[in-house]
Structures are given as C-alpha cells and as structure tokens.
Length: 362
Image 1: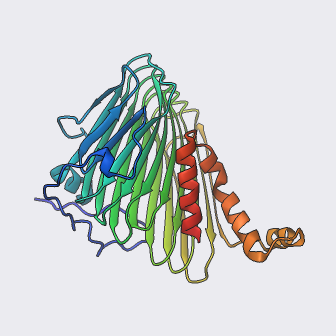
Image 2: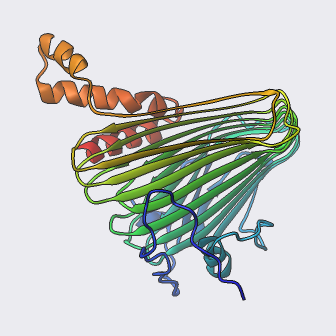
Image 3: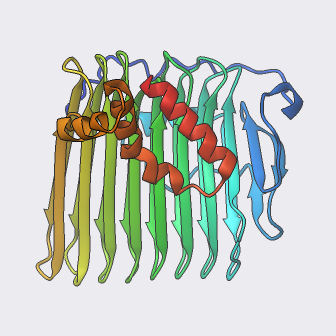
C-alpha cells in the first residue's frame, strides 16, 4: 500500500506537527443552555458532532449526511479525516431558491478532537450567504474538510472564521466546484492561536464561472500558519481572483501560497492574485509565494506580492495630528483589515470578529 504524504506547505516545516494527536472518545450530551452561545433564527449549532440547534429558512435542507465526499484523498490528512470523521453537516439549497437572510453555522469543539466534514450544495439558480464559525472551548486538535458545489447560475457568499483553541494543531481543507455562470465569494479569517495548515481550492469547471477568494490571517507569539489559496480556470470565460492579507508579529511564522492555474481551452479567462503582508517584528517571519501556471494563450493573468513594515510617513502624519506613536500604529494596523471585517453583514459576528482581531494584535 502506498502511504500518502502530508499536504504541501511551502516554506513551512510541518513534518513533526502532531496532526494525528486526536482524542475521539464518546462525549456527554451538551445543550445550548450549557454554552456561552445564543441560539438565533437562521442558525445551526453543532457541538462535538451533535446538532444541538437548527433553525433554517424554509426549503433549505439540513442533515448529518450518510456518506463520504466523492473527493479522492490526495494526502494523509484528507485520508485521516475520511477514516475518522466524528462530525458532519450537509446543507442543500433547492433550485431557484434565493435565501435573503444570512445562515450562521457554528461548530464547537468542547470535549474531544474535531474531525469534521461540511457539504454545501447549491442547485441551479439558487443563492445563499453562509457564515461558518469554528469555536474551540477545549484544547483539542482539529481536522476539517469542507466541500462546496455551486450549480449553474447559483451564488454562494461564504465567510469562514477559524477561532479554535490555543496550543492545538489544525488542518482545514476547503474544496469548491463552480458550474456555468456560478459565483463564489469567500472570505476566510484565520484569527486564532493555533498552528494551522489551511487550503482553499476552487475549480471553475463551468463556462462563465467566477470566484473571489479573500483570506485574512494574523500570526503572533510562536505560532505557525501556512495558507494555500488556489483557483483553477478549467472552462472558458472564467474569472478567479485571490486576495491575501496577513499580519505577523513576535516570533510567529506566516506563509501565504497563492496559486492560479489556467488550463488549456480556458479561453478568454482571467486569473489574478494579490498578497500583502505586514510584519510588525524583526523576529517574525512573513512569506509570500505567488504562482501562475498557464497552459492557454488567450487569457489575462497577473500577481502582486509585498511584505513590509508600518509606513513611517503614515505614522508621522498621524502623530502630527496629536496621536501617540502607539495610537497611530494601532489605527494603521486596524485599517489594514477593516474592509474585510466590514463586509460581514451580521452585526454581532462583525463585532465579535473585530474584538478578536484587536485582542490578537494586543
């Protein structure tokens, strides 16, 4: 039997990370009342693999699923997930249904490691906005695999917030397939204290399909994060955009890998990526790896990447208006990420996320 390898985490050594340090035993039943959470309409709450609250728009189907995704495990961590998953949620939006209210999906780790699968399927001409939150109430490792299928002319707006417990190791893999004229708009927030390997792979398989992938990460302390964002143009007239923003401080390590691939016969397609990293410490390490892989001539593509420190001219300008250096620095750093936070429509979630960012940056 051929042993599968770890996923590629360019410029980050993950060889000795304890991804297999999973505690998978039985857990006591937990109710919403026992959690510091408020159950609301248009929300699903899952604790240690059990749905404890589900109130969704009429017509949206929610289940725990019965099988494993039709996605071939290509590395040892995907295989680990498929062999040991103890939590699963499947969400289906029927044809022509447009859901006006944001659906919140809260996945809580309390008594054991999380080996979780999410499946979201949008039928033709449907639309929904989903906010996924992963919350760690116990210091357990996590292995998360999520699969999104966007049908023809369907639209998914997705925010993923990873807020798992400190001192843990997390593998999070997202995979999306977008059909003819389908649209995917994703914002990923890696605002946590874990060591993290994160992958967001999007395949534009239908003519006219489009994807906008935005990822925000903050690494501090001795934390290590490696994030790979990939868009692949497979059909003609497809558009893939990647925007990565990150802040690194203390002795942390943060690496962004942006991959754009345009396959043969994907004529009149576009693939763009931008990575901006702000390094707040001389002892921290920030890495940007942009890649463009192009097999078709009739296309447009480009990438930009920068790694820098706080702009002294901006600091000087704000100090000249009466701010201290610390106040000026905080305002600049906060402004660096504000557009991504403001894009979340749910006010409570937006406030929580802004507080988490402020706490993370100290």
